[in-house]
Length: 119
Image (cartoon, rainbow, N blue to C red):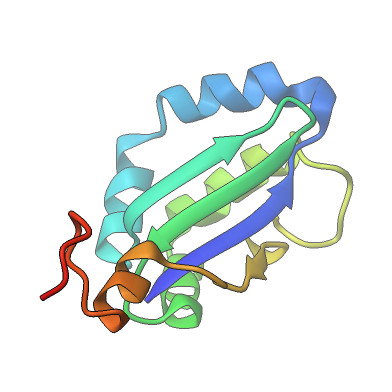
């Protein structure tokens, strides 16, 4: 399953957010991978808009597996300082975006390969 989500980083903390994500704790990286977060990327806009993308078996299950780890609790506590004030941890405030277009899926449905040739 492919998942895209959005969140918002407080604009005044963008440098700190970038710095933290330039060197994520190795224990956190391993926990994400072990919890099934694959091909996980984050994209940050100059206004604080944060877009995440990952592939996983089941997003809710992947979130739940991370919630069970001590390192995630510590990481979320650190990251919460960089997000607008909220009663939720940053990873609980993700808004999942609906996928409305996928090039590869539409090419396959049209019977066209990746180079535009009909099969």
